[in-house]
Image (cartoon, one colour):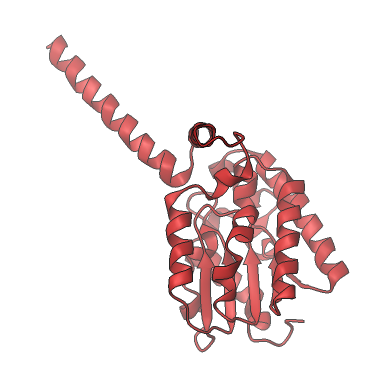
Length: 247
C-alpha cells in the first residue's frame, strides 16, 4: 500500500510540475524571468536586458500576423492582454477598429512592433499599457521613457494618440500593493506629459478602481477585466472614440 501511495504521489507531483511549467510559460510566472536570463546568456546577451520582454511565442506570433494581415481602420487599440481580450468591434459598432493588443506586452514591446501598428492606417491610437512593465520589475522611469518614445513616434507618423491611464491591479487577488504604487507613479508622469504636450488623456481608473486598486466587481483575477469592466472602459472613452474630443 505504501509503495502504491508513493507512486500516486510521485505521479501527482509530476503532473503539477508540468502544469506549473505550462503556466510559467503562458503567464510568465516565477521563475519565467530566470528562464529568460538563461536563454539570453546562451545567446551571448546581457541577462535581464529588455530584449527578454519580447522573447516569447505569443508576441512573435501576433506581431507576425499583424504584419501579414491588415485592413484600413479609423482607430487602433494598442496594449497588452487587457486590450487584446476586448471585443472593440462589438463595443463600438460602426467604428473601424484594429485591435493591436498582445498578451504580456510592455512599453518596450510596443516600440519593437510599431510597423505592424502603422499598417492599419489608423488616424487615432488609444494606448493602455504598462502593467506588465511593473509586474516584470521594470522601473516607472524605464516604462515612461519607452512610452514617451512610442507616443512621439505615433505623432511623427501622423497618428493622433490618446493616452489612457495604466489600469491598477487588485492587491487582494494579484499580489502586492507595490505594483499599484509603481503604476500610480507611471500614471502621474503620463498625465503630466499629456498635459504638457496637449495630448488627450483618459483616466480609466476613475471608473475601474477605488482606493484599494482595481475594483473586485470588474475583475476575476485581479488584473484582467470582465464584462462590467469593459462596459466601464467603453463609457470612459466613448466621446473620444466618436471623434469629438480627440485633439
